Image 1 (cartoon, rainbow, N blue to C red):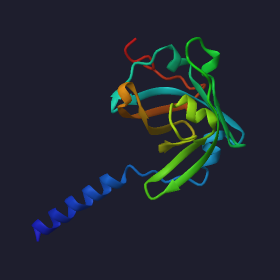
Image 2: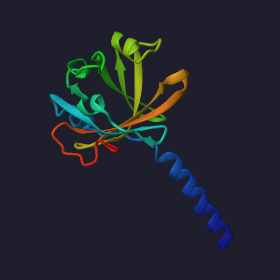
Image 3: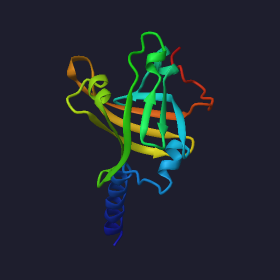
Length: 165
């Protein structure tokens, strides 16, 4: 009997650990993301294939605003050498794999250097004070990496944002 219980427990642990990556979108997701009008988020930290990234000036000054009207913009163009700003339509998308923020627009295609004019950002966490999204991105030599961004409301103080600096 003990062996079957142990085996059953191990199966339960494997199933629950595999399904823990799926985030269920709460009913108030729109309010959490946009504050029912507009909400600006900043990067608290970023991971590249699981490794914490050092955040330079462009990452530290980066802000992204989600508006309740379905438009999102960032502030890259306002800072020297940080590139052009993103402006796109956003929407929530949910399937069997989880919940996503979908960005769609011409700038998605050009700024993310991809063929499609849309991109899905998998939501790992969404609360009033934390947004965690992950996405695949081709970097140097066209190697695809998984990027995970941890964003917090713009006014929130975050210790250690510079990481190595």
